Length: 281
Image 1 (tube, rainbow, N blue to C red):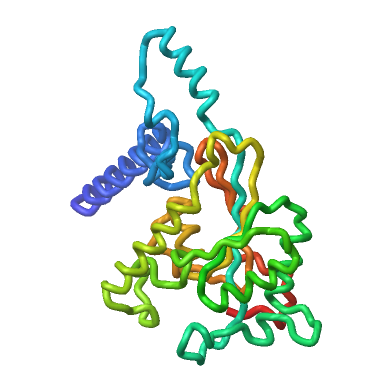
Image 2 (image 1 turned 180 degrees about the horizontal axis):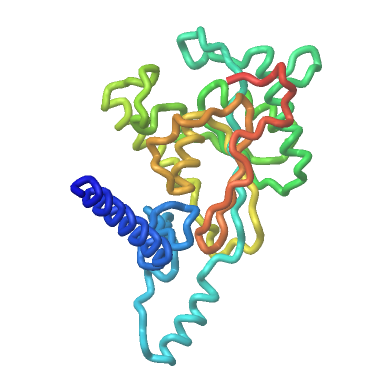
């Protein structure tokens, strides 16, 4: 009898567990789920629409007066941008990493053209030309490998102005997560480089000015660490994730910033225009 009593108790507890589980299953609308494949997902981080400090709504005080609101709407239609900014981030070509000084870190035979054979820098220039966009300028890092790469690209757009920018030089933007033994540097190095690279981000990435009437296309030639950091910042991903993906030499990253401040990415590290033997980095 004792064993029978225990058996009945066990099945009663088990049965109640099944009933409770079924009840919770059919009451899913009362649960808080945090997985992307559920219908009541709540984002862990909200998108910051004013990431570039150019969101019109952030500088206008709300009003309940209809006449004031009409004036605000009229003013907004004149002061909100209408054009898109397309930015092409090009990593430099393969270079001599054994050289100690920047002036000696020149492109290798793979990175540039020799004997009239197109190599990395020429092929990315050809790719940009094939897209047939009306580029407005080339902006480049002042490091030798970036300048040489941009010179090859400039051959395809001889009339484009070229701007030099020290802010775009290679560096270490922020301590990566997860940590990497190969990227272990003193905090001072990250502070020095990180503030400079962040300044470059704020200078070149923002929605279009109000007086820009048509979409623009710009080319920036710089470095892998810089580009990877820019992508993380643009997408509002954790910036310390910059080391989690790689870029081939002379690969192309294509981003667009729309008038609302939303950011789109057409390509990250696109190197499909390079033959297999030229995939380095």
